[in-house]
Image (cartoon, rainbow, N blue to C red; front, side, top):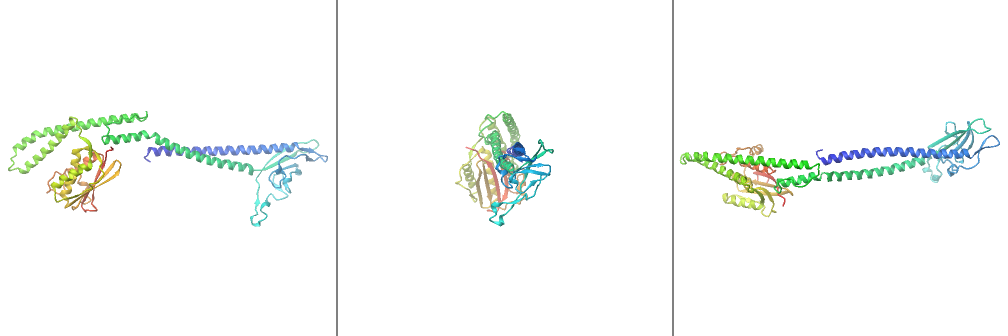
Amino acid sequence: MNSLAVRLFFSATVWIILTLMAAGLLLSDLNKKSNFAAFDDRLNLLLETLIGASRVDSSDSITVVSSIGDPRFFQPYSGWYWQVNNGAKTLSRSRSMWDQVFTSDKRLIGGRSQFIDSVNLENANNRFIEKKKLHIVERQISFPGISNPIIFLVSGDTQEYRDNIKKFNDTLLVTLIVLGVGLMIAVFLQVNYGLLPLNKIKQALFKIRNGDKKKLEAQYPLEVQPLATEINELLEHNEKIVERAKTHVGNLAHVLKTPLAVISNEVGSEHNSVLKTQIVLMQKHIDRYLKKAHLQAIGQSVKSKIAFMQFLKKMINIFNKIYPNINFDFPENFKEFFVYGSLEDMEELVGNILENGCKYGRKKIKISINQISDVEIKIQVSDDGEGLPVKKMNEVFARGFRLDEQTPGTGLGLNIVKDIVEFYKGKVWLEKSSELGGLEVNIRLPISIL
């Protein structure tokens, strides 16, 4: 989990789920207790109404002189019952009890506590036995003229308050799910909005790499601004190091130039032609790097946006004249794109690759270009030569490595190609060409945004 956004979203989501689950359980428990308390209070109120409506009759028994007021006490087996006992003797009971009575342990006897629902009597296969879960409240009251306390019992079917609890739990579950999804969406938007400054820094660094900008110029939030400041200081520090290195290279080339000229004068061209040729080659390299260092020292813009397709056509025209027997196949109508870099670097990069293809190929070199994304391009250069063993494909990038000692060269070509590509944050690798059968050079380079 390397994504900061995923970490923030995942941790917030876990916290939201745990919090909502805990809140849901707490609210459900509180609702259950409050519903039961209300149900119990209702039964106690009915019990007090029953006690208030009870009178001692002439036979020293108890008579309920008025109705409690709930019609379910008249509905047979409704689960809503009342009963008046004197010890184990039942003095009075509600009509809803029908042929049943409560015993001292609050069990129903004398009839069936389960009954066949009359609604389904038309279809005998659909008959079922209904079971009631009752909640019973009891109170003992002493009446004048009666020696033992009178026991009053009222029961109610708990299905009513259980249905209320289920309805509340269902509503609560839907509400918490909707709330949780809403909170996760809010967290997702918040994380993405909060990380926008980092995306701005990423885009700005890409522009810096491509040469469109030299430093981070936008204003960032207080938490991100120190990071932007440090990046700007690091860029400035690296620029100074590179300038110092370039100066040293220029100085070194300048120091070597005079001794090399003396050696060249002392070597006779008639008897030391090979040595003379190598001295001339060294002088060309030294002159090249002196010129490059001089241009950078005086502040001329060495890097620029290069129209790569136009540049590639010019390079191929040059190699057509040098190697007229080589046929170059390349996409002339490919859409123009721009690479930010030094023209000399691009000449060295493309020149080395094409030169190797011409040296080791036979008759054909194919160039393919594919745009991988808006910011990256892939270039493939294939030849119809003998190719390379897989083991050698990585070794050829080493400085001074040469496959053919008889072919003129310094052994620096592909090493220079690798250095230039990596300097521009690209990638280079070799493969066997599936179409021509020779070597295929693959290069991925960032392209400049217009």
